[in-house]
Amino acid sequence: MADGVRTIALLVSYFGPRFKGYAKQPQRRTVQQELESAWLELTGETVNMLASGRTDSGVHAYGQVVHFCTSTDFDATRVARALNSKFDDDLVVRESCHVADDFHSSESAQSKHYIYRIATGSSPPVLDNFTCEWVPQQLDISGMREACQYFLGTHDYESFAAAKRTTSTTVRTVTNVHIQIQRNRILIHVRGTGFLYKMVRNMVGSLLEVGRGRQRPNWIKELLLTCDRNLAGSTAAAKGLTLYRVYYSEEPFLQLHKPAPLRYPRGIPNSQ
Image 1 (cartoon, rainbow, N blue to C red):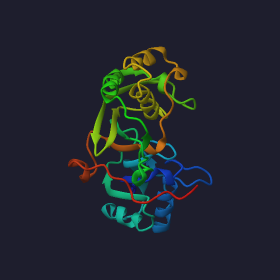
Image 2: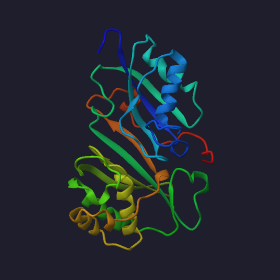
Image 3: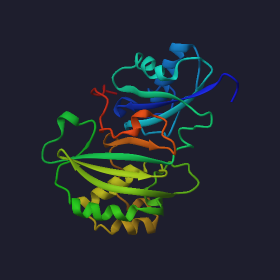
Image 4: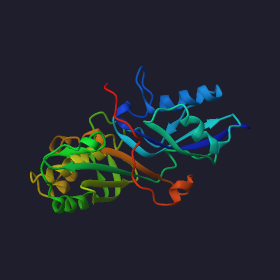
């Protein structure tokens, strides 16, 4: 690292439906573009803000972690407030801090925690329609919980990988999958050391097949063994998924040393 250059980390939340994912794309509104443009406006400096992972278009984040290198003397703890002055209410930097030069939001990450939210019942969830998936019928939660156990451990997740994946291997380790019932919503928690493109949404899609009674819980085990994406369930909608938290050996943010509720940035997405 050159003299005078520091690394700053950001803890970022955003409302997925208003963005075409995290990573920059030509003529598309993305989270990375918003962050970098705001920093350029504040300091005149062009930086590359790298995230812990590239969330898909429409996917939310509560605890996305971003880092960048800067040669400015901007107080790291004031970066969050300064950036937030440039954003609408669909993007917020919850915290900013100075980190070690070798910190990398993605490469230093030890695991990630996703939450998928589902509403059930005869009426659609009008008030939170853009933050959860609606399933009209009641689901077999007991069967889904039994099915979750087959995901645990290190497996080949070819059956849950998207067609556009670019990784050399589909082997991943999932450390926790469980279902929580909260305020008439079903929350599917998934934590692992790394995930394939659309892997969590594909896992949820197959769990929903079990919940609807179309498949037995041990069907998940069969899918892991067959390594055939065509046999698994459909991909669950992006709007139900939130990147909740990224874990590091040494947590850089003060907020992460105490429990925090799952919340979403305010706002209803503009038509696109």
